Length: 74
Image 1 (cartoon, rainbow, N blue to C red):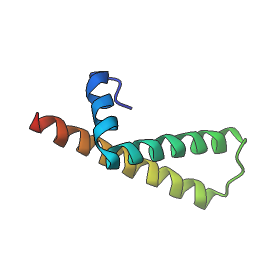
Image 2 (image 1 turned 60 degrees about the vertical axis):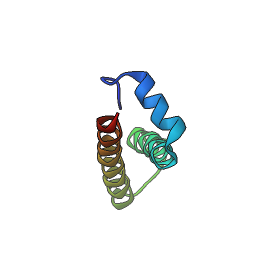
Image 3 (image 1 turned 180 degrees about the vertical axis):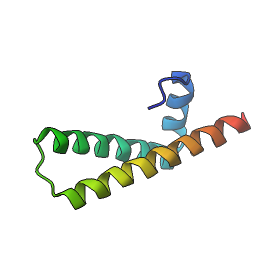
């Protein structure tokens, strides 16, 4: 998700910011579940899949904002 950013900055946030780390892991979990559902490995109804996609998008937006805010300070 942060491929365009220096890995050291992402790793520092993962290490030092509990909220960022938890949200990052939640986003990864949702990403895997959505992919599995789209491949038919994880059976989900359309409503649940749509909810998961929305939560994943909100997590990504929040992570991006957090990353930019934390790195603007430094």
